[in-house]
Length: 137
Image (cartoon, rainbow, N blue to C red; front, side):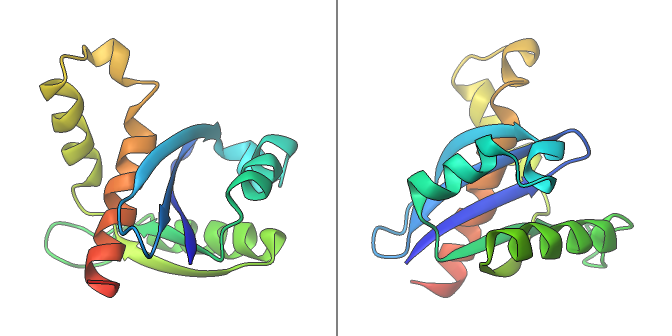
């Protein structure tokens, strides 16, 4: 089964890919959230190229385990994105995904400025990898 993981932000959406047989998530792209929400050509092209069977969205959860203030907004956006794509979807706790992504990029020698174009896609891969580990191991 092909999966796309999405880390929806106010401005950018990070996107990752995984196949449930390989069980490894890969960061693939960052698109503007507006493009994804509008079902614009760059998003449609990704759907065509990766042919996902399901979308996995990061769900904002506070460190204490409670739903974050942004959770309802992300859930509404996720439902719209999945409906436009005619795909099923699920959510996975995105707690600390950006921090983990930042640590990965730091270890690879990226500066804060260089991270901007990569951080959201890596965060999406952290979310997707967590989903894979929880459901396909």
